[in-house]
Amino acid sequence: MLRKFQAWKKSQDLNTLSLSERKDQVTQHPVPEHIAIIMDGNGRWAQKRALPRMMGHHEGMKVVRHVTRLANELGVKVLTLYAFSTENWKRPKTEVEFLMKLPEEFLTTFLPELIEKNVQVRIMGDKSELPAHTIRAVDNAIEKTKHNTGLILNFALNYGSRHEIMGAIQSLVEDVEQGKVASSSISENLFSSYLMSKSLPDPDLLIRTSGELRLSNFMLWQLAYTEFWFTEVLWPDFKENHLIEAVEAFQKRGRRFGGV
Image 1: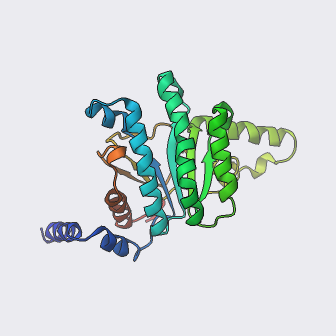
Image 2 (image 1 turned 180 degrees about the vertical axis):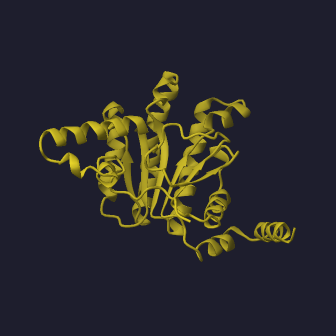
Image 3 (image 1 turned 90 degrees about the vertical axis):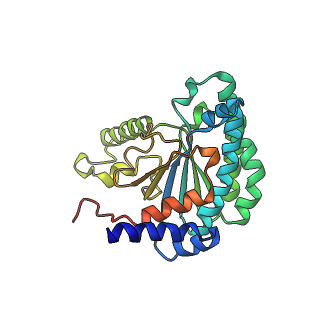
């Protein structure tokens, strides 16, 4: 009973703190090095307001800016955002075309700040199927931020984990057949080096919005020991305090990685 009261009292105390004060408290403890987010709920957010689904995606893009800024301020090293999956091509053509324009709009308007804040932009996914204007915008942002040494803002764009894993297997098999790799040397670390995330640490914290409780083909190999945090909040309604709440929850968990 005492523990329940103490937990309730602590939650009440947190509710009285300003965002700045909560940020200060969070940064007194280890923050996740790599946060991955499945940004879900844009369409439902728009439908609840009798708006076109595209309006939800546009509002969601604004949230990316706020979350990126806060993650950078907290000292997060990598922020991976699930922007467009390999399955999203099944959506209506007009919606897909709109989604393909968002990286161009986002990176054009936000790029000066990303450069100023020392943020490095990366992409994880199959670029070959993306429209030329999307590729140009992404490549421009990657080129202009490649020497930045702060937060890595990693967009999973036309990304699917099964596609990634199959591609890694095929590349590894080819290297074994060509004598570049000995089959006896295959390990988890070696296999990881064939994935699209090869230069990044595995996520410490996965956030998924909108109340859905599934991974949706996202970083299946990399999330083996990641802490999950789910929220009913739709992505366009996701605020800085929600990210703080997720990090606070992460800091309360004991990560044993299979140990005692």
